Image (cartoon, rainbow, N blue to C red; front, side, top):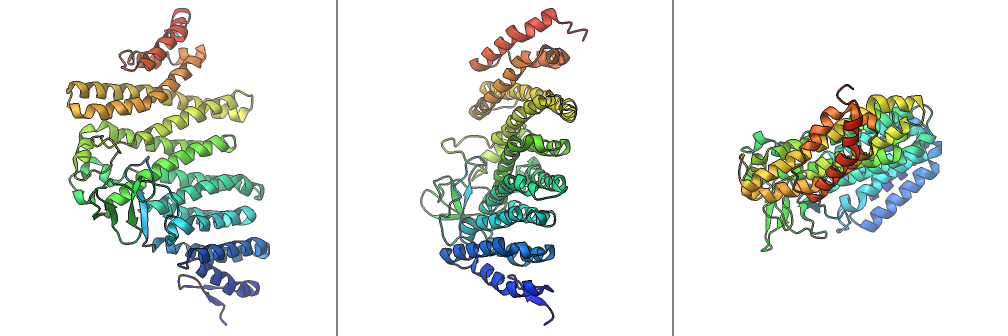
Length: 481
């Protein structure tokens, strides 16, 4: 009688819309069934709820939609936070078990993504509600991504990717608010990607984290890439070779989840730039690229501290495990390289757009793209040379490095070699004016690679020296420019 209606989580909402008062029991009943233990019941209830809202939502007012999202859809996902079924997790950031619904009892693996999809589909079907509801959907996705259960975090990243993919459709139905909506999406993505490294990967935490809180490697329940963990009990379980189960503490689960998520979000940034580069403003481009750069810088900081990485490796059990490479130093090489590849793909496209005569695009190219591109080239050349030097010192056992580090450090320089080849190719195709303007750093950086151990790099270096650098040095007034 007072307009108060219950929600799934036990709270109440005030409804003064006679039409919604009639709809509410139906919507709430369907939402409750989405939390049913039986998978077929969950699926059917969610299907009917989605069809109902899509078919009849055109009659809803903005305030009605806010009540539907806050009181019906969002509370459904509370089941993800109370899911105590076994979950899969990774033993290193770049190798992840499949997110298949290996257990129909798991709400996270079977139902969380479809619920997020319903929310995004409704924003697509009724774009007029995006301005008010998109920030709340982003907030919920961020909460899912920035918690310790890896499966839920990865589903959150996948759903964030779904939302990015839906932005053009949402844009068609908005009037003047799309720029602010893209700002909200870019800010959410950047905030996740640029988080500092987990505390366990910071050198001052080396003595603080007990060995029992370290990640344990093992064969997983989904293709052997990970292990199982409970989403609610605060401990993971992993099968040792003898078949027994041991507990893995919260610290390691949160650490590995964040590492997995950061890599995936940087990959999402790359995908976003690949699809929507011409549509993004300079501030949005800067925000996304800064976040990717920050993630890469965090990885470089870890890689430079080989002594600390040795401590992490020698913990029992180790923080990360690499199948077939028991002695491998913990690394975030994929996270470091993802940002380089992103820049080397997106920035030349921005430069090409700037060369097409559009004054706005030319401004982006001149003020943002070329300086950023130059910094990326400098960074890749410098970092590769440093990685080669570390590996060389480890092989000789000098400079504080140990022979046991050599294979790990050589593997990291090898992993970076394709990125370096791309940089050499970019310099080889650069115009003479660019080379003259930047000769002060290009020539010393290339000279640092002369003693490189990889023949592919030496061949590329020889080619650029002969075909590009020598002609510019001989015929161009480099010193006077």
